[in-house]
Amino acid sequence: MTTLAVLDAGTYYHHRTIYEPRYRDFFDEIIYTRDLPEADLSGVDTLLVSCRTDPSVLHPRREQIADFLASGKTVVAMGSTGHPDWLPNVNWTDTPTNFWWWKEGGEIGLKLATPDHPLFNQLSLADVTWHYHGYFQVPDGAQSLVDVGDLGSIFYEDTVSTPGRLLITSLDPMYHHGSHFMPATTRFLDGFLPYLKGTTAELAKTT
Figure 1 (cartoon, one colour):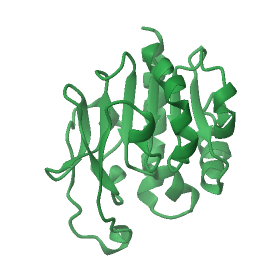
Figure 2 (cartoon, rainbow, N blue to C red; figure 1 turned 60 degrees about the vertical axis):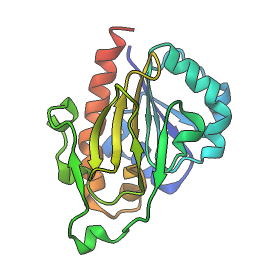
Figure 3 (spheres, helix red, strand yellow; figure 1 turned 135 degrees about the horizontal axis):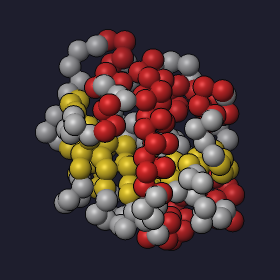
Figure 4 (cartoon, rainbow, N blue to C red; figure 1 turned 45 degrees about the vertical axis):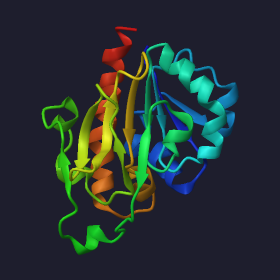
């Protein structure tokens, strides 16, 4: 059995995303973040760290997560989780955020960096576009999925920094879907979670 586990930080937006019927069946296991130190991850293939999970809870789990990645597993780190503090080889730059772009429109500068990536069989550029909080410098050998102009990436896949797979993004779809605004975030989850469930099953066969 392949297992996709998700971290629940106990917020209203995590509850709506994780427990309500629209997405509940994608998650094989739900781990409350405060229970992570005692969690047995040996049967988990992909760990989804929900957006806006408190980095101060994740930082003490660096070694646990590093061991998980060392066993060839997948970690998905969504936005506003303090990635550089608890994951290896993450280079992040904060920028001002236009929180009202989704209402005002105009040019936001996002582009698909790898349009032939399998993720984009499920998602379009519009589905990953609502705003951004900053950008990453992609490690050598890793692959950007969505770039912001020529500055860097807001979503990338890293299979070189560890024996496992990292999907790193600054996107925060759970927050906005759970808050009942920004329609693109719901479309993102509609495409991303089936993709993640499918790749979890495929990669589990090789580990």
